[in-house]
Length: 217
Length: 407
Image (cartoon, rainbow over all chains, first blue to last red; front, side):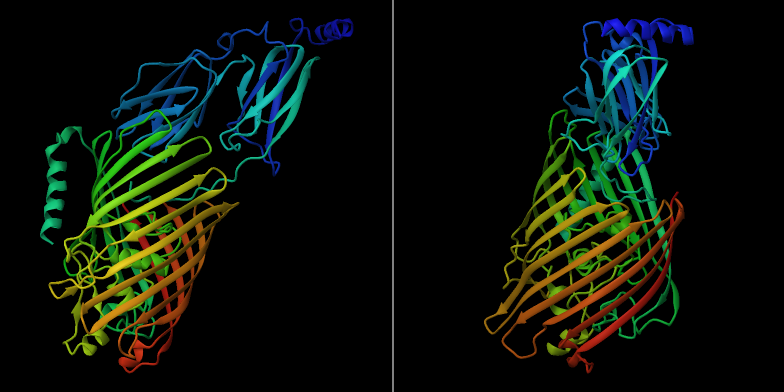
């Protein structure tokens, strides 16, 4: 394979003038109806992980999750393995943030206006976050092992730049993907200037949101 | 009534005893103005056998305040929440009444299991419709026959424990409760029959019994019944479970038994030995929410050697709710109900009937909900003959409601 990869990479290098063997990847996530899926995490897992740098070499290691109007913002936070999250309560009420997920188990009580100490997330996976006081509050921390990981925007696209050429699996996660099933993935042989893949995910139907005036706790 | 007052006073004292500055208070509420085109049957609220909230005693059409409700939630500690719901309603006995008042203790858990306990006065976990402030429904003004009855006659005044098992895919909850002061429950569903209205009974309210009941007992009308009263000094219980599966929906089941002594009488109020099963299911298909409940139960009184009344009651409904967008919700519901009463005379109180409800909700702002609702109830009840009416009646009611919420 190396025989033809080198001239190909050279061609890319000559054509783009970019650093050797680096390419750009765009994952486009659509649901079963063809609609773009925001808040999906696209991660490139190389066939050989031996040379994979730590996720923290490329992803921001310190993130903040706000609580505003009894809502966690953002819905999905991407952090590298070993990264930290600060919880910031901007509401006029107390929140008791917790997770019982295998990836991270913790609880923090935050009075109104209070900020937590940065909390380390050392194991890869997904931590579902809740508030023990306000059951409707939910958010997710995606703790990435691969440095080539990104979150989709409103257009359903996640752009990952400067990925070494090679063979990968592009894996997608979303909060509305049925739990317990294998995550959708596609083979991604990255070469040339850029690669774009469309990945379809069958998501659980969720209740459309409408104005509500919830009663009893 | 006295023990209940003590409980309420205790809850209030508990709220006051916590350091005031540390407590988060959260206020919610609404005022509900209605334009009504009532049915041509006199409502049960006025002693007749009309099954709706408004009837021939009202002007046609009439503009009125249906109710104003205020809810306060106090976060006494992160794991201790107290809640009280008060209501102003023109027909109730007192200017203010309470619908619920309770304290919940729920320690945070960082594993799959979480437990909690509630104490005070609250609704048992039966209704899938009444999820909003003041025990109202996001779908219709008028709840189903089943949940109308729950709102009229059932209130847990006691304690309820819950144990949840949570995973990524599902939450399974088991609940059990011991309570008192619920011995009259059953009198309305048996002596008046099923009804469809959103006039929940407050904790100090006393619903109107049919004047036909007064006449049959040679007593002067109107007769009112207690709903919150301990008659036999024997607690009731229920056990319930729910299963919520991600992407599929929720089912719940409850077995309720007030374990009343059917021979006991206090304050001229008979204890109704009432037990029932209720099963409910909720699922989501695209923009459409489907709710269904079925209830089957029995209520018995035997106040003397010579008289008993044994009523088997059952009802079910299916509701389809369509959420168009943030501002619009449309709902349609079909109800069926029946009672089979046995007593040592021919004047039995059996009935059967059905109802169709259609509601359109418009919520242009967080502070405003406008609902138009049409309801048609078709029922046959022999008791109507005792009031000189035909046993069969069709009632139609139109309501246009504007609910103004505390923003």
